[in-house]
Image 1 (cartoon, rainbow, N blue to C red):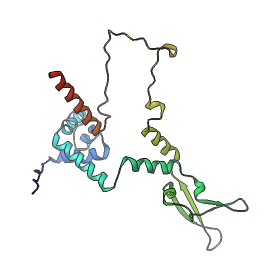
Image 2 (tube, helix red, strand yellow):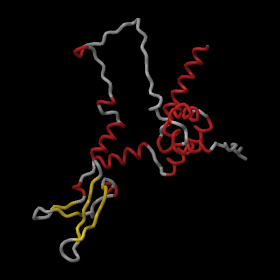
Image 3 (cartoon, helix red, strand yellow):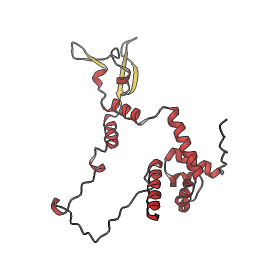
Length: 205
């Protein structure tokens, strides 16, 4: 017989914080949505997010949502690729007079995924209808794919000295790293926490 975990009771504001965070993925905004004042929202939000029970509930709900809709990174990449590389030529046939006719006869389900909308419009003659198709935003899909693959210049940092030469290095100067914790995903923050705990434990030995 499996042991049931005790149900954690959250305050009304904490429940609102959890719901808001699942929507915005922003701790400060979620705290404000839960009723915190703006000047204290950042501190209170982080206090709640660092609460083990609240964080576990957030992760549990996120996992359940992803499982419910079978959301995986592979599926997201695939859907973006279908939009990015879709072609209007998959849905039209060129007539002898050079005109185009919409034809879905040979279109596959994967090709149809690149469509944004399909409209049926009454033609000039009675009983005649025209079909208007609209393709999804190819450029945005390509940009999203490029960001995921870190192919954009903004995602890559190339360092050089004056005039493109080598960077002068002073061994006596300590290197400092700034980490944008607010911009990190929950998974990245948890990984950072484990790394820091490991570093502290190694230093204590």
